[in-house]
Structure formats: structure tokens, C-alpha cells
Length: 452
Image 1: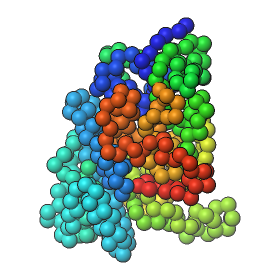
Image 2 (image 1 turned 90 degrees about the vertical axis):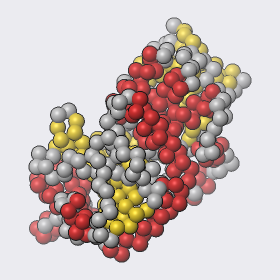
Image 3 (image 1 turned 180 degrees about the horizontal axis):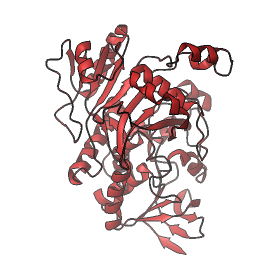
Image 4 (image 1 turned 30 degrees about the vertical axis):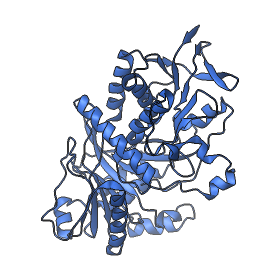
């Protein structure tokens, strides 16, 4: 069977759905077809932290994310906040007073990019706590709290040696499946459609897109194709004889039903910014030190452990997220995580939140899920035209796929329709890597820039 489409989108993750939304709803392109062999948002998009922030040290990414958050706020207003977007903020914590100047310096740098004012509190009198639900647009910038007694009153579950906190305000999280469903409803009402199938071949003539062939045997004639295949975008690029310059990192999270009420359900995202030694008692340390296979569990682990509460399916849980291994790898499904991952994350969380000890005995049985960060060497996305006429990409959205999805959808839609482009568009172009060898790109690698 053969059909026609104005635009075909390969992939129905958050990037593909957002691209369809901006093409169909914002630009009025009716005959848009999303093709994916899986249900929408089922590969990696719904398995992240579902969070957003405008706190980035890189100007193009900051501008891109600031725009994306504004678009998310527009969707929240239009949908009566169907995705339950909140603005609880991100709270960066340290137990080392010597790190306070570093936190202040980082905050001042983002503030200069447009992130909002930095307010330093040596006592808690002028600090305004965030609201647990809804969006709070009047609070931007960040609050550096140096009053340790105030920190203890605000967050009594934290370790007693917490020395400072930086509360970044234009941050929070949302329910990604609800966001995706809301966008898809509007896409299909206005003429877009979803095809559950797999693109196996892309047809071209004279270096121009002419159509796609599907695993079912069907074909779709089209002159425009958007690759939004998430961690499979490199595989998708091979159908156009293109080597997409990306690699994968595996990122996981543990999901803990918080039956003991260790983390208050109204807590913000909390990030420990110091390296962490996992919490063990003396007997455990002796046992771990006796084996070369387990001795590494006594070494310091990298900073960046974070946690947030989540209520879903009638249960109050929390998500513990820590990427201590950023080695590049191939995207392989089903995902396989380090068997020690839940123990490592929970023992690390106990450094920040001592009450986590109550879950030590059940750590081995905790569920783990997650997905791949699809990344370029400079940790900026790939959004825009490809060397084949009519082909575009909305990919390499790293760990910011949810928060950046709206700006990515808007930008690729602008490229496809010929609309005006924002200032940051060239920073995300495919051709920025032209002429660079694999060794050149490895040498320029800054792939953890801005990553938590």
C-alpha cells in the first residue's frame, strides 16, 4: 500500500512528538505522519527525571532552554497544566564550606547569561520557599543560602554537615506521558497521524528525499523527512548514508516506594555537589576491602547524585539518579544496568539524607530503569537540515530531551517550513562538524558540559 505525506517524522519519542506538534498545530501543516514501531514515548522519553532547568553554562544551550521552558509554560497555561508542571527548583548542596565560592562563581556566570539575579543569604530572613505545585514565574535566578540553621529548618532530613545550598528557581519537573498525550491529541485532531511501523529504507533521487519504505511493505511518498529517532538516530542516519556524530551514555535511576516517608513529597530536586564516599559500617568495610572485585565500593564516587519525589500510580516514591559511569557505549535494548547500581545509589543518598539507611536491606531488589543520553562531542543537539535535500534531524538531545523538546520542535519546524530562525540555530547545525575527523571530535569533547 502506498500513501502520501507532506512530512514524515521517524520516531515518536518526545522530540518527534514535539516536532509534529509544532508542524501541525503551530504551523498548520496537516499531512504529517509520525512513524514508530513502538507506542509513543515508550523507548526512553518517559524514563528520565522528567525535569527542566534554565541553569546552563553554555550560552546557546541557555538560550535554547530558556525558550523551551517558555514554550512549556505556554502549554501548561493552554492545557490547564495537564502535565502538572511545577517550579520547585533545583537545590544544589555541599558539605564542604570551601566550595561556597565555587557555587557562587557558577551562579554568577549563569546569571550573566540571563538566568536571573543571584541572591546571597547569610541569614534566612529574605528567603522565599518555592511552592510545591504549579508554576511560579515571578521567582527566577537563584538563592545562595549560607545560614546552616535555616537550611536545617527548611530541609531537616538533610545531613547535619550540610554547609550551603544554592536554590535555582526556574526549574522543576512534569509528567511526561501526560504532556505527550496532550500534544498528540492536538496533532491528530488537526490531521496528523501515527503509524505503528518501522522505516527500513529511505528513497532518494538526485540527493532528494522521495519517500520511505516500511517493514510492513507499505510505502509513504514524501519530500521531507525528520529524523527524531532518539538513541537510534545513528542507525536512522545510515539509511541516508550519513554518519551522525553521536555516541551514547547509559543513565539509570532507582525508584523507591517511600513507605517510611524519608523524603517529603513536597521536596524540590536535590543535588549533592561533592564527591561521595558510600555509607558503610565497619564490618561492611572490612568485607568489601577483602575482595578486589568490591574494593572500588570504598572509593569516592563522582559528584552529581540527585533525588526528587514522585507520586504516581497511587504511590509516593522517590527517584534516585546518579551517573557515575559516563563511558560511551552502543545503544542496546533491552537495557542492562550495573547489578550494583541500586545499592550504590542508595548508599550514596544516605550521605546526603541519613534516613535512607532504612532502605539498605531492600536495596538489591529496587527497580532500576532509564535510557541512553544520545550526545554530540560538544553536548549540543543536532537540529536542522541534513546533506540530503528534504532531510532534517531533531536529535542528540542528551539528558535534556524533555526540557528541550519544545524549542527543538519549534526549531526543526522552522527549518522545515522556511520560517525565521533564532540566534542559536547555527550552534546546533549538522554542518558544524564538517571537516572534522573522529580524532578531532574526540579532542574537542566537552560532552559533560552542563550535565548534572
